[in-house]
Image 1 (cartoon, rainbow, N blue to C red):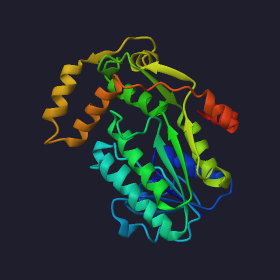
Image 2: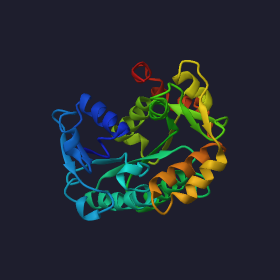
Image 3: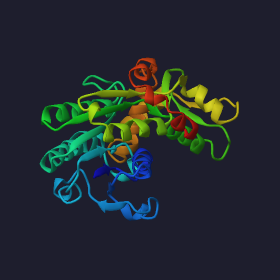
Amino acid sequence: MIVVVGGTGRLGHLVAERLHHDGEPVRVVARHPHRDANSLPGVDLVSADVRDPRTLTAPLAGADVVVSAVHGLDPAAGQSPAAVDRDGNANLVRASLDAGAAVVLVSVVGAGPDSPLEIARMKWAAEEQLRASGAPWTIVRATAFLELWTELLRTTAARSGVPTVFGRGTNTVNFVPVRRVALAVARAATDPSLRGKVIEVGGPENLSLTELATQVSGGRPPRHVPRAVLRAVSVLAAPVRPGQARLVRQALAMDSAPLTFDAGPSLAQYPWLRSTDADAQA
């Protein structure tokens, strides 16, 4: 049994879908699984919250592999990377160890203790906890999801047709099709030879947010929110809208942090990442 925690999210849903299609027994765990009850017919959907370890015992019963596809960046969910990506994953690792299951942790390229991105620092803490736990593990690190950022830019362009970019938008970022990441995570869940490995997954192109926004708008250059405004918002919004302030701080970090990626070494090490199926559906 493979348990996909965060299995109704953008990545987790695709992982569960691929595993189910391949005939693997799958259980999806989410905070609100009833919202997606009909999205994966034949897949067991159960409720749990990684922030509360008491909710994890029953959903992980009988698991051979636990996939962590959770994240705490959604401001509408009232979560944070510290609560979900660090502490929640620590809870999940302990529960997986108790269940005798291997763990596949979805992390981010560039994860490290000194990263300017909060999510990368919290994912690094989760990686360290997993490596020290004694549970069999595989870590899949991904760059920024292409579909997520395309969707966000389209949302900002809803009325005028002109997307809005936070900051200068000149910093180069690697964007990866989420189906390529799902392919790597599903492979990690089913291939025991990948235990103890860190698999880094990125896309074929490095683009600035200005370039991506221009593509999204069909050639129209985006508007920009100045960095000074972002810095002010990150401070003023923190007491009343901490989730929004967190995203603004992330936007500021993304406007200057090193976020390029060369996919060549990973593709050479793991040729199956070149799957035409993953690319065709991306």
